[in-house]
Amino acid sequence: MTNPSGLSEKIAQFYDTSSNLWEQIWGEHMHHGYYGRGGNCKLNRRQAQIDLIEELLIWANIQEFSNLVDVGCGIGGSTLYLAEKFSANATGITLSPVQANRATERAIEVKLEDQVQFQVADALNMPFLDNNFDLVWSLESGEHMPDKEQFFQECYRVLKPGGTFICATWCHRSTNSWAGELTEDEKQHLAEIYRVYCLPYVISLPEYETIAHDCGFNNIKVDDWSMEVAPFWDIVIDSAFNLEAIAGVLNSGWQTVEGALSLGLMSRGYERGLIRFGLISGQK
Image (cartoon, rainbow, N blue to C red; front, side):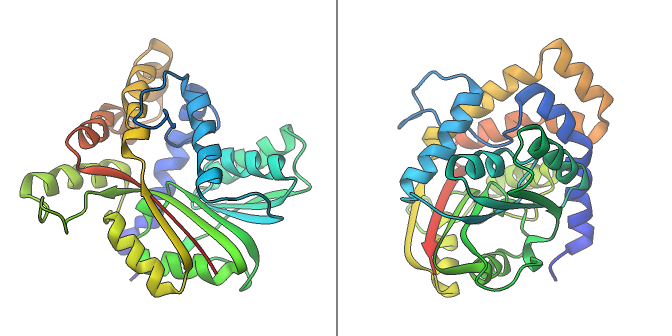
């Protein structure tokens, strides 16, 4: 079952109602920032978000590509950035019609509409041919996927032989170390995050690595950048509670209000080592 209890509709509604507000407050990039090894660099939030994209490209050794799909594209921040940087064709998919429409508007604004397109589509059943893209990019969308195996299988299917898959996603801590299985308190903490941010569940980075192997990816790399991105949530909390932001949150409905009030769930999750920021890349 790939859409338990209407999850896709809930995710679409979540981003339909909140994306315009977050764009006003944060800009076009709706993902973590990168604050240097150890998370000690003092950067403005937008620069840190761009740095995350650039660091991912370096980490995965992406030097060129001609056709990418951005799986879970938001309002097209990464899609447009990558398309312009590499003079590439790009397609972004999202469950949110509001996001797809706004991303299309932004492509026109920056005169990239001839090489970039956005559409509403399900990452677990992508409307693309096999062997179609030489880069499959997923920046903080894996946590929304109700079937992680099918998600990776679809990414593998649409990737061209020799192409690269990059996934950065929210994880929970590994359970195969001395820390052992998740405690009841940790499970409750995760359950609150799932409820507020419309997530089915998250898994550990070692579990993602196993899935990537099982799907057939080669040259698999994994890394944990939790320390590098953790400062992001405190910065978001600061930006979400100025007068303009508070007014926007209140006008966006209860779901957005609850999301704003619950930002500390993620900050505390990083502090206690429960939430991890995992990277996986592989080739076909």
